Image 1 (tube, protein in one colour):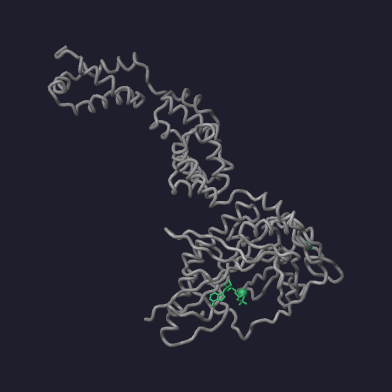
Image 2 (tube, rainbow, N blue to C red; image 1 turned 60 degrees about the vertical axis):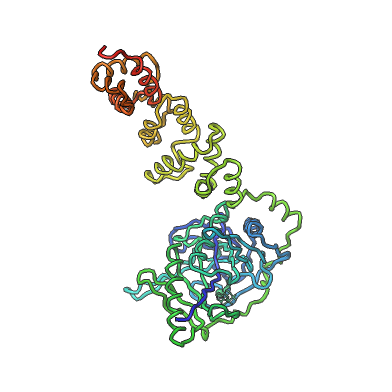
Length: 482
Ligand code: ADP
Ligand code: ZN
Ligand code: MG
């Protein structure tokens, strides 16, 4: 089989997290009863006029800036005309030749290397409704709640070269949108939708092959599955001497195949024209500067800072910056317990485990930074052993108690005081005269045995370092056959 190169470009629709729709006051809440969130504007009844939600413009500009785009000013809405039952107006308000953001890029991590993926444009548009087909009953329903939801469509150049690269891009983009708090990133609910375009070409060939667009992909896993399936399919067709038809295919996750939705012959002519009911949007350079300054620290920058400032391994930094709330949690803990690696270990280990176990996110964690800080301090000053602290973490996490009270109540204090330890040591030494003699005749490795006995007698609460030191001293000074 000839060697092919995969070429992928992605179109991503991000639903912007506003409370009301793009051109009317209807709610954007997900999951409402069908057709309860509509008004004459989003239904497109005659005689009404759209009013632009300015929050949307702000969110689009902030996203564009985070994606290194140029902000187009003035940018302009355009009508995209087509007929479909889920689009009662008969046209969608979108942007065409003056999209709000253009010519950006995004860096993705691919194992050891990074790749820059160019972003051709990002434009605002309203969403359409949803057709719900009930094949068994032989009827279709239309839910227009989604009509007029604000979308930002982000389009890349055909820069990606593998399904893994496409997934990496999508994850990176999603993280940025979440950090910016402009989209909830939920692929299952459709607030982040990805439509990959994919073609193959012979290795070394300059021109691109014919592309296929894939639709109806609602998880990261399916992005990978759908692309891998499509790569295989195109490879087989081409290797057999066939040609790829330019078409839109729908991913059927259940069967694990893509099926033709429409071919190029059915392609629409949308008859775009400037939207006469909306003014072009002017954004002053000062406004853009203010928005640029208001951008939060983005995932990549935060990751690099965590590595440089806290001397964390890259693995820790990636995990801790995987969401803003988690990164904030980490930094709050370091502020109270300035040993970043110890904090990182507790968060990556016990905390994330407990959160996962109780199906809880970090914002709602019953263990706030102050309690974790207090626990780390108690381990640090040897009030409680690390082992015990780990063992009781989940119970402590679920309780509302401060670690000190919890430890007291459950009698978990580590025994570090010399008097108590001496008594324990006495006991063990005197009940094991044979081992004692052996130690003194040179079997040094019996020290472990003695320490183990003390730990056992103390039900694990003796301070092992101290027992070690005291036991060694005792064994050396003990009179044989005492
Ligand atoms: P269309 O007009 O069909 O929407 P565009 O040229 O606007 O096509 O591109 C849409 C998306 O498809 C972009 O993300 C672009 O990068 C990608 N794309 C374009 N040509 C190809 C190709 N030959 N192979 C893979 N992806 C492509
Ligand atoms: Zn409405
Ligand atoms: Mg397209």
